[in-house]
Image (cartoon, rainbow, N blue to C red; front, side, top):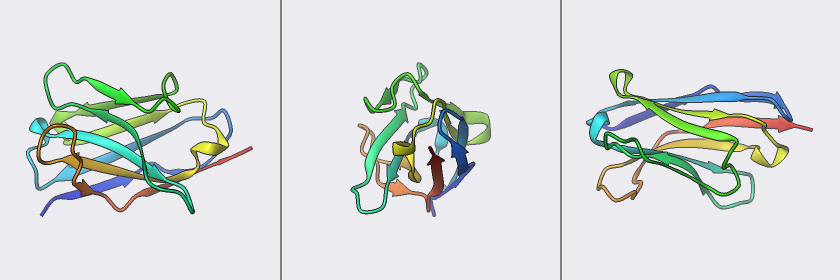
Length: 120
């Protein structure tokens, strides 16, 4: 029932920017912590960023993206965003949206992913 649909991926030059969106349905979005993960070919999926459902919207970022990526949400649109600036080739990966359905930053529901490719 839960559906997470990512969009906004594409090909971009190093130093450029992209904004990923994830439209969520089948869950109480305003009460759900959302996150972003990525997986490069031959590598394990890794956490990128997340944002709490709570009113303060606490965010958490992987060290590799701190200062470059910003996670935000629009509860009125059931959408979470990942603004990616100063992109590097090592950011190239399939980016997944995820939802924490158990509380406690435990992500258990996943989208299909959107490809981000950063050329040098």
